[in-house]
Length: 355
Ligand code: PLP
Ligand code: COI
Image 1 (tube, helix red, strand yellow):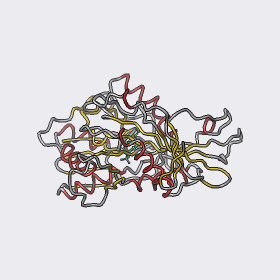
Image 2: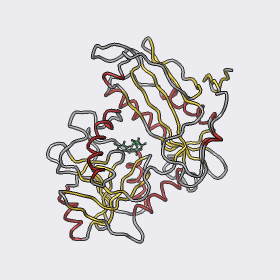
Image 3: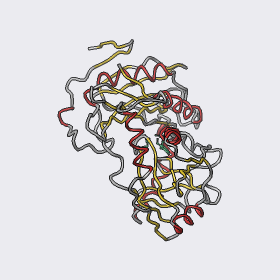
């Protein structure tokens, strides 16, 4: 049966899978809600989004996504507060970044109204799937790819935009040990590093596998010229605390402009923490680790929220970070999650209620 919400056609699933889910033991992104948003691009325009049951999609082997990797995504979360109200965090920033990625990958940009109306209709249909337990949320994965066919190496003429969701717990369990990369690069000047292009992640899997064999969970990517400066992690931006100053690299065309990163910078300023947005060399971090002025390092991203690092490996040596009684990471994580879950005043106007 087709029902309409805000002009979005909704086809409901026959049987919900929700009773199969153990909401007290959620991993990250591995069970999916009952429905998804699907929106097709044909004949030079995006058609209206619709909600359909979550399930397989059919593509021809010649679809360009399989050959030339025209594929981009976003990562967002929906939070349920104590009263059962549903909240998003800076959702139009995700829409804007999706379109920035789309432009770089020669994919047609999608109107904000389609993105937001599709997303809100989906969250209302699947609202029971938004976890209320502490530390859990509904991870939202909007993505877009070339469904149009052809072996000619040129942009496709048809695309699909889909939003699928997964009730999720933490991305990392415990503190993260990272390796500062000295051989491989994630992104290059003039490349696609600032876009959330699927291939950026595929390109990290092999170096990350090598790092995992040595006992590290993530790589800290360094600049592609001579691996001299810290850039970001595979799925997070990086913050470094030297003495009481919180430092993060400036964004550029190799680094994803993280929404968590820019929010943390604002909250840190509001907390009276001195912040610096500047290039940080590996040599500076190693020297700070040796002389004890390196107090904390943490990753920041939607999936990982704020993930403290246990230490890092560089040039064959492991450096541990100290255990602090009152780390910035915990203070900043509390501030940002209190805003996200509607537990505190939203003084920056970042929260968005789905009604
Ligand atoms: N850097 C990379 C490479 C990412 O994949 C992500 C995750 O989205 C981030 C940084 C953090 O971005 P955001 O805070 O917008 O989720
Ligand atoms: C996110 O933080 O939302 C991301 O997209 C990271 C992802 C690679 C899990």
